[in-house]
Image 1 (cartoon, rainbow, N blue to C red):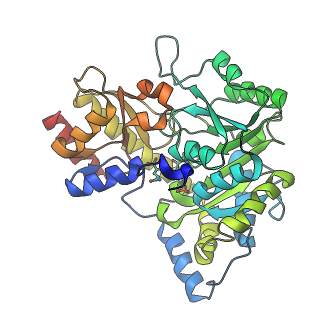
Image 2 (image 1 turned 30 degrees about the vertical axis):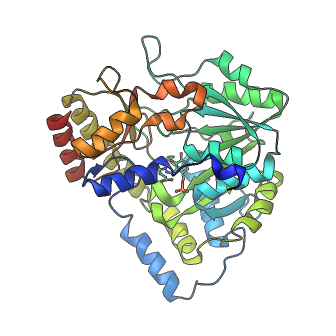
Length: 389
Ligand code: PMP
Ligand code: GLN
């Protein structure tokens, strides 16, 4: 085994989805909807195949999708001035986008700042490229903070002469935190001071609750010229298996990503790119209904977890809920989640896998539940939690 993979096991998502299947558990682990995306978008994919959109797309992506990505950014996030020809690259999911941003901008020995808990591929990719991650923990809501928060001095201390990239993820997986404009302005100031670029992972950009609003970092003056916005069709259109993602960035940064992308995959599935353009052009009612759907599922699972005696942090966005499992007599979150999937029949994800070794203890008193599931599955999961916990 090469050193860059020798330390890696199977991802926690594959592990717990397999366990869920084996034990007939309700799968609130891996974050994929157990329902399909809009019929009109699926029909657009069938039509693209029938119409012969079946050979390689241009490496940066089908132009019609790049135009739709630019229009969508202006329509929903006030992100104007996206030139589809020089500022967009279409990738195989946000996952490839994240790798290509790092390949394009970060050298071995450079440093990348990650908030913890982090989506697990960030840390793996930092290692792949021989860079070093510096970690800043997000802290759960407490007496003086209504939402997940970070200590500004801890962020300042993570920045240094080798820092090249800050990874942001809002709405955040797994905490559901939505970064405020003020927090982003603070981070933007720090990045400007240290000449650091920002990878902004916004795959949950359409899944927000209550008063939370999505602020796209690329629309802030301090971040506009240094931000690479990453998103994908997976979460917004309940089509996670399509793996159509993209990067939006100023031309010089996008050029760095494109140089990597052309040799990582060159291009991604043409008919699904065509259909993703149709997806991004769905009417406003589609996006409103998506928000309403997830608000109802969030409320249902929050109520169910409370009935089962689990204290949970209400997410501001994304489709995950972090529950507090400390004081329930388990050695850690992995032991709790293993017990849950094998004995209670519910799969959840142990969040300690989203922390560096030195901060793992911060995740060991929590479990992550996904609510992108049908009502029947959510209700059965709650019934089992109430009976078996
Ligand atoms: N970023 C975050 C925060 C995610 O939660 C996920 C997947 N669930 C991804 C990126 C990967 O997205 P994709 O499936 O488009 O590769
Ligand atoms: N992003 C999804 C989650 O957090 C899973 C993606 C994956 O399986 N790699 O659950």
